[in-house]
Length: 258
Ligand code: ADP
Ligand code: MG
Image (cartoon, rainbow, N blue to C red; front, side, top):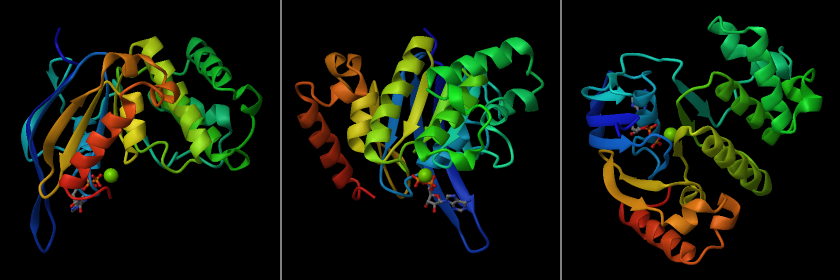
């Protein structure tokens, strides 16, 4: 089957007044339809750059990205991008925020609105339609941001550290929720995280990147019994601790955790 995403020989150079620096070098990677992939690596190894290239927001200096076999030339509604910061608009209610993407792309009809409402309900936000973002906790706000992204029904979700500003318990709950939703809808996701446990617990594959320049150092295929457990329970599966340590050691070898 054709991969959903194909990265072919991607390199990227940032040019500033002072210098040109090679941020990413010759990254080749395929993401299967329905796969959950995590990218881990030291700070500055090019994770965000890579997501922005996949999203069509940055044009790589070399190489190409294919989405469903078509070359990515700019942002499309097939790709949803979610960041650590939720970017909810403070003057809009939760429901108005959740439908923002649909509204901006001229797709806000009654059925789309009803689907968005039922997604909010499914994330325990039914009572929050008419509240404003400032009235919500961090975890609730991230759930709204997630609904806003999913309401567009993208084939691919790009998640750049979406859980890292949350407290531990909220983060664990959201991991399970996201894994559940994506799996039941057959969505494909690429997650950037600096939490190796999270990466190992939620993913089908974990890609370790090294820096200067950013390149793929190692690919971990997560064993089936760990993949099939919900992230929370994946952490208790046999072999999980060993896997975590192995990813940890790889990351130390490429230049530390941060
Ligand atoms: P990560 O997300 O893994 O921390 P980034 O993709 O943000 O890494 O950055 C990769 C490298 O590119 C870093 O060395 C960073 O300083 C550099 N970089 C990122 N964005 C820019 C930019 N807009 N201009 C110049 N250099 C940049
Ligand atoms: Mg980053």
